[in-house]
Length: 345
Image 1 (cartoon, one colour):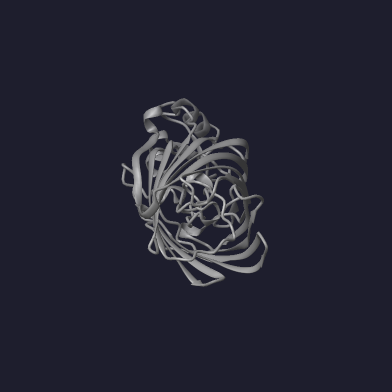
Image 2 (image 1 turned 60 degrees about the horizontal axis):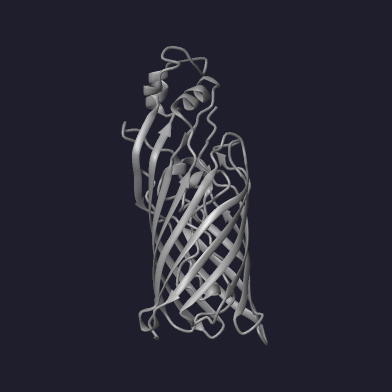
């Protein structure tokens, strides 16, 4: 029985959208189970969305890096001897290109494309590893303790899925705004990357998912004072069946951020809390026991406005709480660096 295991079972898909809530011209991205950035929305980093609608079209570039703790080769061999099919990777890099535009005064849209790169992939249960270890009644016999039987792949990279996300502001009074969130993740990403040994790489480490994911929720923005702003959101995602009969678990995410300073000021620091909860994944008709869970991140960041040249921003995300399902590696930290430009400037 194959049990899919990956670095962080609680982070799901990498989605991206403009970080309008904090006045940053960046993108929002939810993390995805097994450390993928594209699979559900998130992969790269997590940032809070607000309800303040864009007033001009703009573009954004962003780079995210996620780093994970790792199992040793001996641990991976030990898992195989226990009948556990485990795979993982050590680092994920994601490059985002986004385009956002207003539809009317109460609605905007964002389209985001991404390129995903996983590094340090190790699998103890693909075809190469299985043949090397040798199996009898599903358990390893010959070469049972041989770490060279692990299947290792330096990189798995390619185009990820495309996000289309909209916001419709239905409430605005004084300094308070509320918007509905809607959209989908479209299966435009690569799903046929091979390992260094020529086997098809696990679905959790393909750049794309092969699934359509519907998403919806609410966003909120408030100006507490002339300099202090609060943004929050809650968003749910429901994926269809994807590549190789894999269905990612449904997820829900809640974020809140406080920023200080005038939104068009030179420096705008912010502090966020980001929480994600995921159901277990399903492959075929089997519920993957080593998946699902919950994570809470503390995410300090800062935006620097460059007047007519747009703005740049950086965010560091630290997981302060992780409760992951089964055999899973904790995420260590994330880092994001981005640039955004509005055409109306």
